[in-house]
Image (cartoon, rainbow, N blue to C red; front, side):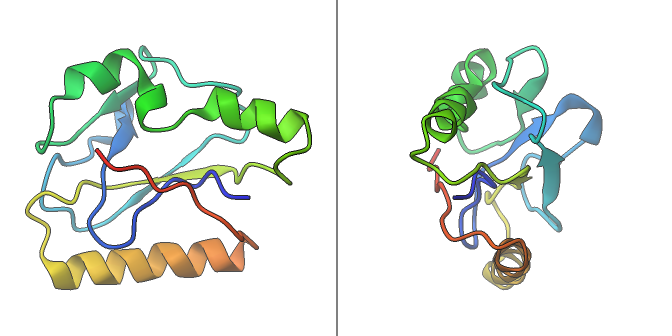
Length: 123
């Protein structure tokens, strides 16, 4: 099971502070490792997106990625595993052709990683 959170085409973004991800008009996506994490912290992660009110997500990143719940499901055997990567990009003002290219690249990466399911989160 995947925890590489992504949406096909236009998407949302939750991004580590150090990566300087843009808030709109994405030209690339970012991969962030969650392999060693049991949960996300609002002090370590921040939403970069100009299409919604970020304050709520910044105070509780579980609205974007409920990693602690996924880890619990993994521990109890309900999930085969949590994919070690999170995929992030904003969809606001991103041209459809760019969104399709980025989405295809993410899908190819997930398929190559043996992912057979994906958590799609709308913001």
